[in-house]
Image (cartoon, rainbow, N blue to C red; front, side, top):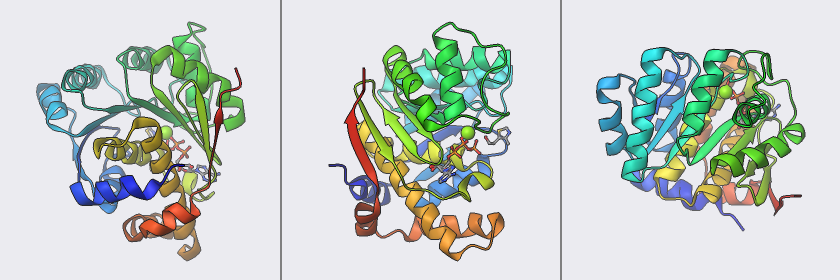
Length: 274
Ligand SMILES: Nc1ncnc2c1ncn2[C@@H]1O[C@H](COP(=O)(O)OP(=O)(O)OP(=O)(O)O)[C@@H](O)[C@H]1O
Ligand SMILES: Cc1ncsc1CCO
Ligand SMILES: [Mg+2]
């Protein structure tokens, strides 16, 4: 039985510092989402300070949404520093199927022992193919958007969890979390969420904050997804469309009552099929 409110309360009480190397599109949204949940965001991508900041933080997140060679250097150094410090870190392999540059970057990062990898269904299918050396040339997704279903990604998530040792979180109309042995499905969320850019990227930060607050990685990831989806449902009740939804969403994250998360989280849990 997972109680998402336990970690949410820890985040609110301890305001973990989350270091994010994320894309230009997501930076402000992600920082605002982290502030709304009660965490303390730091967005920094200079190679000169990446390792130092990662080792100070309670959690690190790395997102390849707008990659460059310089940033990849900073990402590698930050991941190594987090590993040395025993700090959890989350990889967001944005649009990994789209280009050779992204495939190479994501392969390198996924092999640096991330605690969690979060992507949409197409990203997880593509990343698994890359790690499995199927090396897709034009695989998966339409740029940063998903074109595959969660159900379709389940086998890939399981294989990727086993090959990388990471917890795999696949998000979409339903979310799935797999550690290679067990699977949780989360049925919270709202169709307006993918109509606002970078809400997936920001969710990667929320997972980071939950891990940084001390959650066990599988439970912390499931808890973050349920809380986030539920905030989406609540925001949608007040919203007129994607614009007002974005504003309402921050308010819903901040106002979320802890008992409500436990009551309205729709989490189911089972063993992997194979
Ligand atoms: N159709 C949907 N119905 C309900 N919830 C959804 C839907 N699509 C996405 N979500 C929710 O939106 C959040 C972000 O997930 P999504 O899969 O859209 O990320 P993403 O594709 O990485 O987004 P981005 O790249 O824009 O940051 C998750 O909480 C997910 O559950
Ligand atoms: C739209 C977009 N392009 C690169 S990163 C990003 C944010 C959503 O992933
Ligand atoms: Mg994404």
